[in-house]
Amino acid sequence: MAMNIARPRIYLASQSPRRRELLKQIGINFEMLLLRSDPRRKVDIDEEPLPGEQPDVYVQRLSTKKAEAGWHALAFRNLPPFPVLAADTTVTLDGKILGKPRDREDATAMLHLLSGRRHQVLSAVSVACDERVETRLSATTVNFAKLSAERIHRYVLTNEPHDKAGAYGIQGHAAGFVQSIDGSYSGVVGLPLCETIELLELFGYPVP
Picture (cartoon, rainbow, N blue to C red):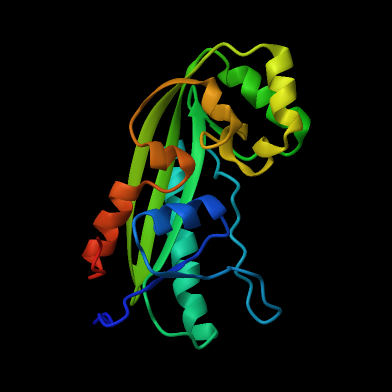
């Protein structure tokens, strides 16, 4: 579709403040598009993995579904049809998906699993426009230092883990857990910027 080059913009179908900050960092003009439920139209995305679903397939499926749901929401809400960007991030260890922790006990268990080991962070980003959806995947290996039980306990008490895949945020206190990363830092935060720019270029957005 033809973009409004005089004032190009996109919609961000995510409530994540981290993704908002990353888009601002690279100068993308966006508006928030919340995928809230409506009595006349259910838009909730089921984030449970399908039986036997591999982590890379899982994260791309969710990202794609969120972008599709965002695009269809534009017509439902009578909003201007600009591209919709969505993303999803998960942490994997030994092929197991570590999503957002259910509670502090779950967060503690996840961090004990990650302690002293390498794990992978998978971030998928999708853009939907005119019934077309494109998705890209970023995979980053993160190496954690060995964490004592006391250190994990103190971190969990900050409540930082509660809304983050793998129960940690690399941009927060948990930065001190990370010995090294191999891949995309922004992907670990939640939005791989290189892949995001690649997608926006595909849809005609004039990226910086």
